[in-house]
Image (cartoon, rainbow, N blue to C red; front, side, top):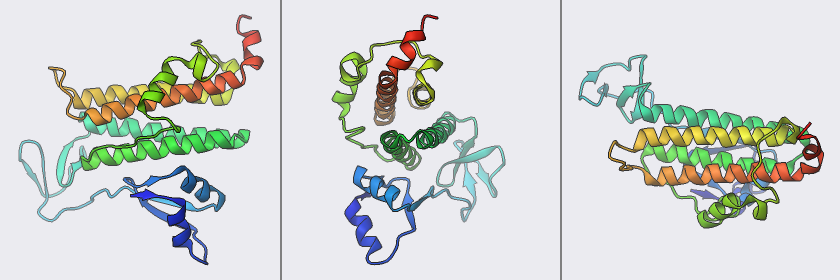
Length: 244
């Protein structure tokens, strides 16, 4: 469901809205995210993780389990797989990336970088929706990211000198904490992308979830753009000492 600012205002009515319960498949518009932040509304995400099933569980071989073994987890519904299954590894990588995004938001908050907080909130919502679509085996659709469609993201990422005022350069601690954090997120998104290839591309090169692979490509492009923007914003402070 797409959650807009108008929907939030209607839910609030004349009273207060302190907590907002959302499913991982829900999407927030930029206006809704701004409204949530200004009103200090706490978002509570429902991962909808099943914990028990009448009749027990089954695995890929059809073997039945009355209880879930500790070394196994839910792929979907009552279908169990080992925790080393490629799709479970992918979910773990996505979970770790989301944790790093929130760390980046905390850093941005300490720096007073409100625009970066908003941009990372969109990245966080994007990855949560991606996780939900993978778990529920639904098609992923998110046409606009950072106010750019897929073509615009690709173009901006491939020509950062034009789009961000920053040509390719090796990351440096001199760029400052926000840029270093964004570079970490960019690298982490690449790890998620590799995990998705391992999960969804067979030995013949056939992809069972091209929507997820395409979405992760867009995600890494978006994070690369954010990193280059931040590096460009502080270039005058770090570029003078980059050769010392």
